[in-house]
Amino acid sequence: MTLSAPLSRRRFLSVAVGAALLAQGCTAARREPLKFATNPWPGFDPLYIARDKGYFSDAGLDVNLVDLTSIGAARRAFERGQVDGCGATLVEILLAADQAGLRPQIAAVVDYSDGADVLIGTVGLSGPADLRGRRVAIEPGTLHIQLLALALASVGLGIRDVTLVPMPQNAMPTAFAEAQVAAAVCFPPESHRLQETGGKVLFHSGQVPGEVVDTLVFDGAFVARRGADVKAFIGAYYKAMDFLARNADEAQRIMARRENVSVAELRETLAGLRYVTHGEQRDLLAPDGPVEHSLNRLQGAMMELAQLRRRRTLKDFLIARDLLAERGSLA
Image 1 (tube, one colour):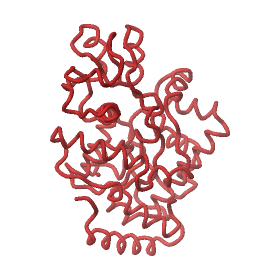
Image 2: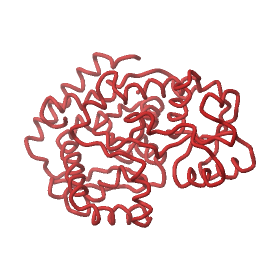
Image 3: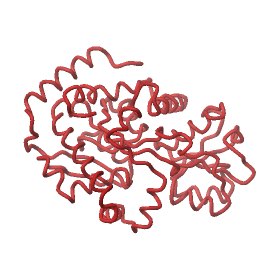
């Protein structure tokens, strides 16, 4: 996620996607199950509404939703070819492209964090500028690095201006209480625990609307083979979103069961995210739009930490999407 996709890749995808769509015709025939990996997160839960309400079946799809414990586990299953697609942040998309040689393609942005992800500092810190030279806890391989990069950039600092302290998120409250770190990047429930013990929010995702996103991703080779099925899958997702809008109580009960939380706990998490409608996709993914801006900041930080070998552009992750849109499949 070189600065543009090679022309040969564009030509290959154009021919392959076109041939696949012609072969499939106008309707999605039943074929081998479509396997999609998710982790517990409300942004991906409408997929379970689609399954439970029969929207995938109505679209002629046999979908196997693979429940995994973390977004990193979903990415690894995607990289190993165990699933056809997965729920992903920009971090997972970049890592899958860089480390596994895949061509992740964004089929839809499903939500963006609207305050759920936070940078919390100890008493005495007034903002991200105070973190220069200080120790900051992050969970490696997660969107923590993305939020921290955005927070530091907002005050003219870079990732090398702080000392990163890697740890699981559930270890952060103890590290915070024992003064092992001056700040931590986290989300509920740990963010609530840190604030309850005196932590102060120095920066949050609501300050960068549309930049910390969750997406539904498929590999370009899969889209080339089964473009019509990707269209049907995304259509079922949006049908579930319509159901959520019209029948919030029933939909949230399905989501809460999937998350293994109470409806009240689910609603608390929902307060910190914003679902993205079908019509909002184009603006979010536009050149120089919020997602591209965030992607560039994120890549700078990850390259400084030697987590990426080369830069990519947002267009690299939209090639198959744009080709399908030309054929009326995705907007």
